[in-house]
Image (cartoon, rainbow, N blue to C red; front, side, top):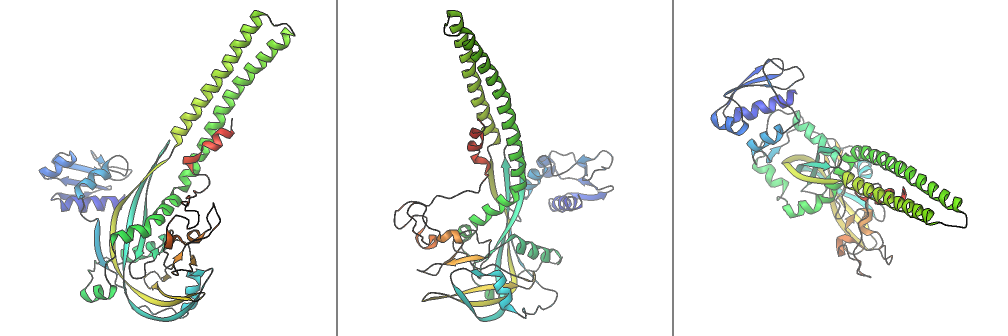
Length: 407
């Protein structure tokens, strides 16, 4: 809890409180009136952050509503900031750039040639998103994603993590100077940012939720199997009794036998209705709702080695740029103009040479015509039907098929 204690201490100090560390892992806080009103504390409060608390300490942790209370104090402060990444020493360019480019770029239907390279600066937008997944249980998490405004490329989770670690290793906050700002280029339009990262954020959240989804599927399988076994035993017992009544009557069916048969048939129908209601309850309890909110952003001015590539597809040519980041010693993935951009494979379209994920030029599921979604959007140019977005198998929101099969 050391990081949480330091955060709370800095926050309260900025709000005008007098903060004094106490052991083990606690804080004594003399709070001003406004802070006492906002947090509901007495004038002198003792806070505890670890498993072992100081005497008479109020436990503070990630559980409960403490983060929401501290977030209300911050408001919109600190949600967006600028910083220049300063390396401890000058970093040389890779000795074999083509090998690194081949590892980062996979053009399935085009070729590329390295035209040139130069050292410079770029503007990266690092964004943190908080997601909340609610089903029979609740899961919260934080994912980071980046966008290189200079090349238009989406920065994957690993590269963003390396850049953040490089920032953490430098305790001094460097503001970008005028020369670096000018070399990094113009700021990116936020609408462009939203369009580029929407699919990538969804993929990252889905990947981060996979252990949670796997556990939820196991619970759903267990509960649906238990409900099926219980109602199947009831139904089989009633059907066995009903068959016995009919066999005992032989060819002659008395009024009593007919009444008993109707009663048992009504029991079968009641069991089936109850089973259907239990399945509906399972669908409701295990339905998944995911909410994603932008929490924080950092405009990072980072040194890079920029490589200029000539992309050739049939008779068309296009120039794209890819950056190598000395702070992370990593080549970023290439520009992607349709799709998440988190994989290295790209297809180049024939019309405008857009670089897309493979799904961006897939054939129409209705008429079979392939087309570039970056050029023409989601509607097939031949049959005018909108492309249906296929979801990964096993998505919890679509469990009806499994449950109905268990019947």
